[in-house]
Length: 495
Ligand code: DUC
Ligand code: ZN
Image (cartoon, rainbow, N blue to C red; front, side):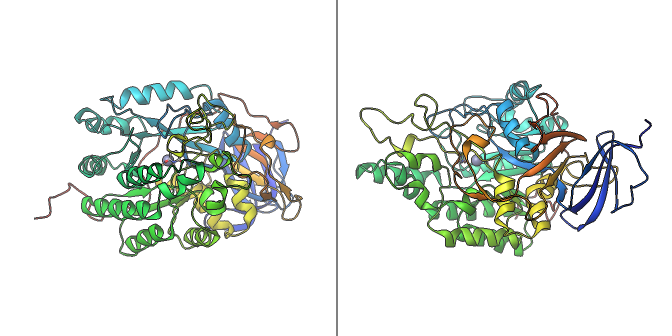
């Protein structure tokens, strides 16, 4: 049978970052070919037709903060998921593109070996499309001179840290990175916590023999994040170059970011579901013991639901440009690489200083957030898909449903009210981790179908995961389409 298209999706409520409406979609050669008013494709034939039955049809999720197959960097322990299991989990939760980290060690001079090694880990192993942010652990003369090569290799963002012994840069090194990033139109992500404050607080707690997981919270006080956020904004303003502050958790840091944005600075910010759904209480669950380690991440979950409410507000009012998972998983029942690494005879309840920081969340990011029903639908697509694509040079290929331009990466959700609310369980997930920090949370939405470049890769009511490992491709990225330096051109020393 001669067909006009590879796939037609009928009867959807199509949601993009700018529009909600009743449209039908046609896909051909892996791209969005047509988006037309409902019924407009009734005379067309396709190899496959899906009836969305009034469910939302949205661009596939773009998760721009994902740690896979990394060595110990954030405490003792190595990340649980590799590229296969991490991307598998992603696709089963509606994320069709992930941007993972390629971490350069402090002892290495070059970034290009790191890039090559990370390509080798990902190639032929991914269920999603993917790219990398380089983590600059050592901004050596060689590394800085390689930023131009990164750009020609399709990498347009990097990440630096203001904390963690293995990665922390001092302010002069940060300026070195920002200067070269500006010259190459690279977006710099910054983990903004003051490492010296965290070390000092950790020592204070140790002196008082306070070692349990719950003391991870006070060892990372809000002040350490707020100070570093303000400093990062100041350094970015001085260099007149865009930054994205990752995983913001405190209302006061969000206020600094909003004030900078209101002054017209190209300051972007990210938050994550853990700062919407978890609080200090999750670090100290009933029964005590070591269970709180499951929620040890940095920054830590904050004081109360009132803090979470402010973070939700920041998504709604545009302070937060993107919502990422910061998927950085460590197995709980694992004392060699996982959360229980710091349990030994000397510390039978472990020692918070050494608990690897990070949580799994790549599969739950979209369903949990949509199910909460607290974001306008267009805003949901903006922060989970369109904006990460725009910020990191993937737009309009990713994050949108633009005829002739966008890859046909699509989530078809359940019609409102059709999915019975259920309690999330780790056994439903597809990562290689033995827990989820969101166990028992109520969910009432999940992608029914996920489509990557025109191919159904997740069919919830059919066989579930139907995509293939290795179908995911590396995506070369261009420059950010969000606002750049206020005064482009060469940076001049203010005299
Ligand atoms: N925070 C985490 O919780 N994990 C990975 C790194 C980070 O900054
Ligand atoms: Zn991080």
